[in-house]
Image 1 (spheres, rainbow, N blue to C red):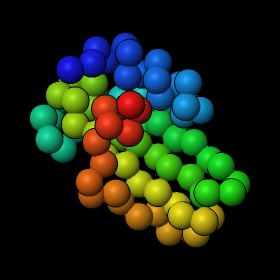
Image 2 (image 1 turned 180 degrees about the vertical axis):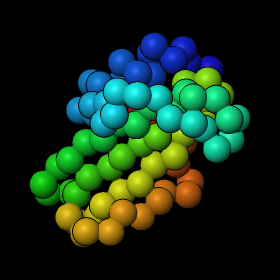
Image 3 (image 1 turned 90 degrees about the horizontal axis):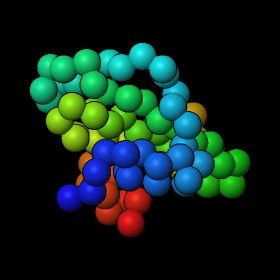
Length: 83
């Protein structure tokens, strides 16, 4: 398993930025460890990721082709995405 620092560095290298500086409560573990990251690419839409630094649960949403509505990616795996 990759270290949290390595995963965060990989997110930043892929163009993601922290979307909100304050951690939020994680629905999985109840800790205030969820950090939100986002990127926007005019050609492919955007992606946002919510990743709990306490328990490791990550969720992702896409805005395909610039659609207004976000769609959750139910099969999202952070380590695989960043590999």
